[in-house]
Image (cartoon, rainbow, N blue to C red; front, side):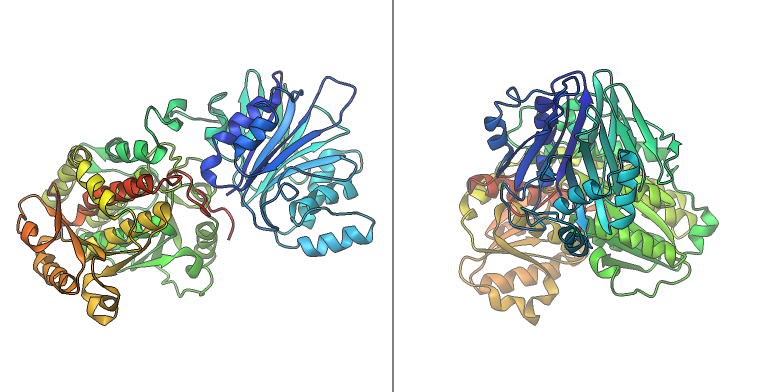
Length: 612
């Protein structure tokens, strides 16, 4: 949520800021703005331009930045939290005198108290935001030393934040600091950068620093300096980003989502191969010994959204293979319900960005309870990756579309590998069965390619039901877990109401919602549960539903049972979600396209939910 870009260098800043912000549009926003100053001029006035709506409004206002001179600047795409979307509430925010300009990602929880204090000291406010409070607080505590001022304000604000700050009296400098909100710092030959996420600056540099909480960065065109809250200069290690800039571009596809759907075979393979050694599962980042794994009494999988749905699949797989009881928790519920964690329980958190606010808090809660944490994340150096003792890095690469596809598929592979590793450590499976699992995992990328090659079947179904009002997904076992993700995809990008139900629950209420021509997607890819699911298909058809049955090649009875049949290759039942989800992603994509919607940036949604 929200995006920050900053640049201090030798080039004109405005075009760089606008280009960087365009790479952060996937994070979700309702307004945008930039602030630019000339580091070489005697006039140190900071010029601010901002607008409500899409970034293109700001680009047109400034002729893509060409009309704004200056080599130092900060930019922002805002997701409204305090105050409605408007030009006044858009970032950057600044003091009445223009002495301080700020962009902010996060929420200041005690902003009302600070606002009242500042008003009592003669400060005026024009916006409804918490960020304007920060700008005025920086001015109030300013003593001629920007670093000292930033640290004073850090001690007085509560909440989460990533700031980019410019002081009029210190042209050529940008100050950046974070607490529980993402921020990276990049070093390049033409200057130095800050950003909320790597894609914003990857065009300019691959050398980035992931700064810790309460670390202050001072950027000039020539250098980056890092300080702790005691104003002591510190060293921050740089990381090299090894994925290509082109990976964050559409590459000829109409939408990022379609590109990322088609990248799933690669994401699966890239996540799988680094964790196999001589045919055995090896997770180098896992610091748990086999003896420690054997002592685990319960696993708590904690996540949000699609990551939660991946966790639901993981529950079936881990319990079957490793014989460990698994609970799957929604992170926002887990952190507030005071869970009773078993002393030898392992908390597994899943987050694509590694910055999901509720999931980060779940990590803290688990550690406070004395439990070990294993994080499954896609971003090296992210907050969750740094806080967890054990990390499994997925290798999905940059995912730009708000609706996740390849990151979800990579998370499934991670959970399969964790299940096999734990099962071997606990000796609940023998080497022969472990080999069988690994061999089948290696076949998944090619099987996904087979499904992608038959995308026209889902395209036809989308053309028939793109105007549907309600869609229902049903399944049993792993099929039910996959149907949860299929339903979410449809909601996210088509705005059609959809629900996923365990098929056996139909008689307990949901079947009352079925009426003539209601679309029901029935997943029947679990051989042991096929007949049971067929009975549920018959039930909804008897109430007038139009049923799309999804099963495996060879189950051709689905032709006569359903109205429309979709087939996918066979795999081991525990791994079936990796295949059955692909047609559901395609269906959602083509329905959204048919409805003329913004596939990659659905309304009201953000890619990385960094605030509650």
